[in-house]
Length: 419
Image 1 (cartoon, helix red, strand yellow):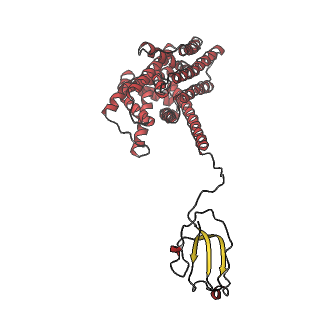
Image 2 (cartoon, one colour; image 1 turned 120 degrees about the vertical axis):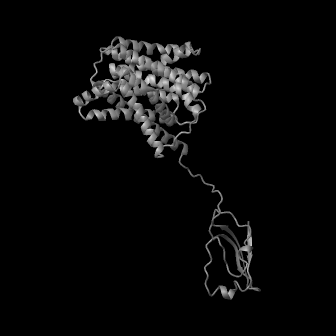
Image 3 (cartoon, helix red, strand yellow; image 1 turned 45 degrees about the vertical axis):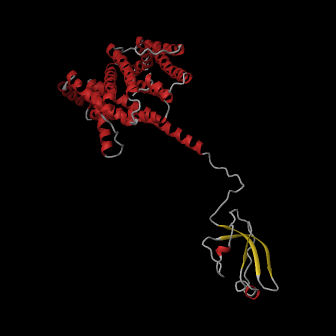
C-alpha cells in the first residue's frame, strides 16, 4: 500500500534542502509489512518515530516550481514487524534428534542395569561363600535399599510417594510373594553356582503360562505353548548335566520363579490406577518386604549363628568382607532401581529382551570370575533355555498385538518383568 507524506513549506523547501546537501536514501527492499498510514507518525514538522523505518522505494521525487514544495511517496515498513519470506530454510529434524537422544538414554540405562546386576551377583556369591546365611543376606539387601530411599525422600533428592492405607493393603500380597522369591533365589545361590541359578530362573515364563492357564483360566494360542518347549528342555538339560548339582539350590530357583509369577499377578491386579512411580513403588515394596522378612530371618537363623558366622568370615577374609556385604546390599537395590527407571522409558517387550541379555551377561561373567566348570552339553542347555525365553517374548508380543491387548498390562500379567 502506498502512503503519501505532504509536508508544509517550512519543512522541505528548495532553498533549505539543496544547500544542506542531504543525501537521498538509496532505494532498498525490506520484507517487512507495509505501514498503512504515516500521517500520524509526523504530526509536526520534525520526523520522529518510536520504531525505525526502512524506506522501500521512492517513486516520485520532484520540486514544484510554483510552490517549491517537495512531494514524496514512499513505502515504509516497521522494523520490528515481519511477514513470511518466500524462501525455504531447512531446519534440523527435531523428532529425529529427540529419538536419537532417547536411544542413547535407553542404552545408558541398559548398560548401567546390566553392570550393576553383574556386580551384585558377584559380591552376593562372595558373601554367601564366606557367610552362608541367605536369610540374613536377603534381609540386609532389603534394609540397605529401604535406608537409601528414606534418605532420598528426607533430603528431597527424590519425591516421596503419596500413599494411603488402601495402597499398603494392596501392596501386602505383592510384598509377601516378593519376599519369598527373593529369599528363595538367595538360598539357591548359596548352594549352587550363580550361572546354574540363572539358567533355572530363565524358566520363569513357563511358570507364568502354566499358572495363568490352570489357576486363572487363561488360554493361549499354540505358538505360546510351543515356545515353552526350548525353555523347559534347556533348563532340564542344564540341570541333568550340572556338575555341582544340589537339590536345595535347584528347588530354591524353582520356588523363586513361582513366587515371582504370583508377585506379578498380584501387582497387576492390585496396583491398577495407582499413581506411584516405578522407583517409589519398588522402594515401598522393599520396606514392606523387610518388615515381613525380618522376624522369619531371626527365627530361621538367629543372632547367635550370625555372630559366629560373622567372626569366622572376618577372620578368613579380613576387613574386605565388610565391604562385600555393603556392596552386595547396595548394588541389589541400585540395579533394581535402574531396572524400574528403564521400564518407565521403554516398552515391556524391549525390557524383556534386555532382561534376557542381562541373564546372559550374568551367566558368562560368573563362569569367568568364579572359574565354574561347564560341560559343552551343559552350555548347550543354557543356550537353548535362553533362546526359548527370547522366542517366548516375541510370541507373546505378536499374540498381544493380534488380540489388541494392552501390551503393558499383558506383560505384567504373565511375568516377563523380573526384579
